[in-house]
Length: 276
Image 1 (cartoon, helix red, strand yellow):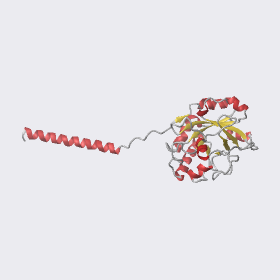
Image 2: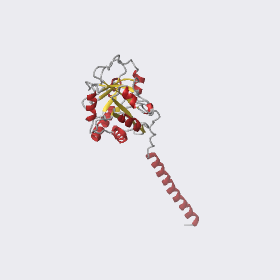
Image 3: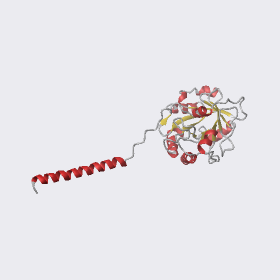
Image 4: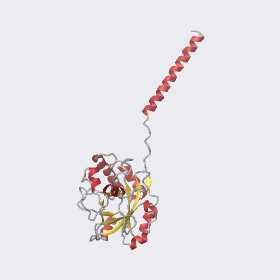
């Protein structure tokens, strides 16, 4: 073989090798899935229990008189900033819930001060998690919540954590999930919370959202206490599965910082929930 022909053959074989490498690289690029866009938490500092319920369902009024055998409390989030807990106690508050987390990427920057402040003032307090079924699984969010303040201890002053599941502030009301998938997601959260904390989480929701996004499942009525949001003179219809509520969020504002709530029973019942 002449030196010229040998040189052409060498270059030809090198070209084939290069083409093969390029083809392999192209296949690898095609085979590698695109990275998921980061979850949107742009509204997390201003979303709290009931913001979307009030937006979608409106406010029809509030109880004309305090219902008998109800215990007054409230819930707050980072939106309230530094809370005057001593003033809340003077105004009649007996218990409080504080937003701790949202999804698996947001922590309430005011949580520690608010949570500890409520305790120092003598309130029975608990933490809640704003659900984001669009960004991660229910079990994963339960673990995130527990790891960032959503746990429970038998001190008689700590309420079980609550799952705030309501209209999606970032898009479609049901987070793009079917009723069956949403029910599974909630089940994954509550089952994980129970396994890790040894207490059942409360479920915060509205009857209208529950019907729309879970198909009005009755799956949780015998396991998880109900915290219902309904801004009207009476609590109205409950979601399927529950024959009574534990907490009624009845107003967006009032004499206490944040949202206004009644526990369905005397203070002794709140204390019993805290003690487990």
